[in-house]
Amino acid sequence: MKKLICIICPRGCHLEVDENLNVTGNFCSRGAIYGKQEVSNPTRMITSTIPITGFMVKMLPVRTKEPVKKALIMKVMKEIKKIVLDRPVQAGEVIATNVGNLGVDIVASATIDKETKQY
Amino acid sequence: MISRTLVIIGGGSAGMAAAIKAYDLGVKDILILEKGRVLGGILNQCIHNGFGLQEFQEELTGPEFLARYAAMTQERNIEVWFEHTVLNINANKEITVSSPQGLVIIKAQAIIFTVGCYERSAGAIKLPGDRPKGVITAGQAQYYQNILGQKVGKQVFVLGSGDIGLIMARRLTLEGAKVLGVAEIMPYSNGLNRNIVQCLEDYEIPLYLSHTVTKVIGKERLEKIEISKVDANYQPILGTEKIYEVDTLVLSVGLIPNLEIFNNPKFVTSSTRGLLVDNHFASEIPGIFSAGNCLHVHDLVDFVVKEARIAATNAYHYLQNQNEVSLQEFAVLKAKEMGYLIPEYIRIHQSDTAVTFQFRVRFPILKARIKLLNAKNEVLFQVVRLYLIPSEMVSLEVKAALFLQNSEPLHYEVEVLE
Image 1 (cartoon, rainbow over the protein chains, first blue to last red):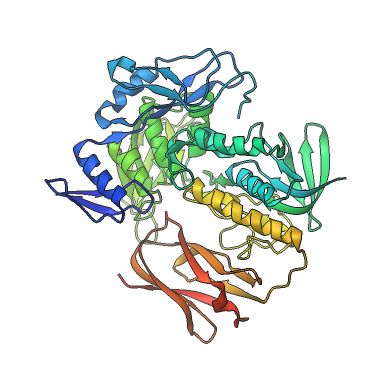
Image 2: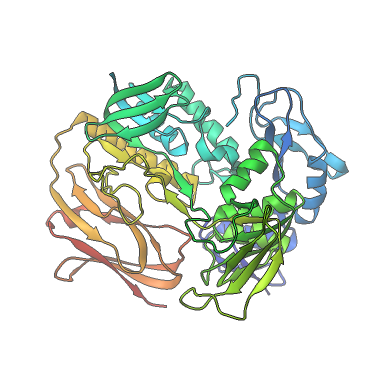
C-alpha cells in the first residue's frame, strides 16, 4: 500500500494505492488515474529557460513537449542547458527534438521576435 | 485632463481579464495603465506549469497562460499605456500617472484596481543577524534566474514554504544548485500540496516544519545561517540551533496586497490588507473596484481571472446605473479561525442571486461546520467542509434571498468537528 497526496488539483486528495494499482481516497476520476500513474510510471513536465541572442529579451522559457519520466529529469535538464537560440521563435514551436536520444522534445513556451519587449 | 469610461490599473492577469470582460459587455472606452513594458505581470517570470487547468482545461506555463490573455486583449484593440505608473487616485476618480512624457491626470468614470501584491522582505520579518548579499526574496530569485538568466547561488536554503519558495527550490536544484532545506515557522506547510510533492519530495529537499532562521551570518556575501526549532508560540527553543553553510537564503515568507496608491484614510482596508470591498468587489468609493492579488493573494491564476471578470461585470453595472440603491446593507464579521474574509460588507442589489464569500483558515482543520449567524445568534446558513488548510482558499456561495430581511451585522463561526 502506497500513500500519496493527489496533485492533479489543489484539493489534494489523500490517496491509497494497493499492489494491484487500485486507488482509494480520490474525489474524482482524475485522482484514480494519477494514483495509478504515480505508482507505476511517474512523470513530470520540465520547464526551464535557454539563452536567446539578438533580441531585447535574454532568456526564452521552454518546456518538454510531453511530461517525461521522473527518472529522466536531470538528464533532460543537462540537454536543455546545451541549447542556445539566435532566431525568432513562436510559442509551441519545437526547438530541439529527441534531446540526448532520450525521446524528449523541447518546446518554446513564449514567442520572441524583434517586437518583444523585456519584462 | 484626459477622460475615460473605464480605467484598469495594472496589466497583469486580473487587469487583462477585467478589460476583456468589460469590453465584451459593451464598455468600449477602456484604458489599461501598466507600469512595465509588457502585459502579464508576474506571469512573465512564472515559467513553471500548472496554470489554466480550470480556465482552459489545459496545464499551461505562466508565459503560455498570459499569451492567451494578451492575445484576447489585443484582438479587442483594448488600449494599453505601458510604462505608466499610477501615483495617486483621489475620491473623484482622478488618477495621477507618472509616464515617460511626464505627469498625466486621467479622470475615470469607473476604475478597476488590479495591481497585484508584493513580497514580504527580510526587514519586514525582522530577520536576525547580518545583512549580506545573498539574502533575497523568492520572486527576486525567480527574476534573476528566469528573466536575466543569472545564477542565484550554489548552496541555498529557503525560509518559508510559500509556493514561490517551493518552486524556486526546484528551479535552483534543476539549475545545479544544492538546496539544503526549507524551514517553515508554522507546524504545517504554507504551500500547495502539489508543490510540496513536485518541488521538494521529488528532489529529496527536506522541509523543516516549526523551524526558522535565528541568525544570518556573513560580511560581504552570506556565509552561514543558524536554524532553530520553535515552540508553540513560535519562539526559538534554545539548544536546537543548527548551522548551515550557504551562499543564498531565499525568503518565501508571505505576499501582501499592494495598496501603496491608497495612502488616503478615506480608503478603508480589510482583513486581507487590500481595499475593503463589498460582494460586488466595489470599494467604499463608488466606482472603484478591486480584484486579484491586490485584494487578497490567490492560490491560482484561474481564480484571479474569474474574480476579475466578476469585478468587471459589477463595474459595467455601475456604469449603467450609478444610482442603484441597495435593498439591504450590513457588515459581516469573520470568525476567529479565519485569516481573512471577503467580503466583509454586503450590499444586496435587485439583480443579486447569490453572495460568494472567500476566506482562508488560520490553521488546518480536518472537518468544520461553517455557520453564518445574525446578532441574535440565529443560524442563517451553514455548511460542513473537509480538509481546510491555510494554503487553500475556501469559497462559499449563499443565496441572496437569505439576506433580504436582514439589515444588521452578521458574523461567521467555525465549529471544528475533527
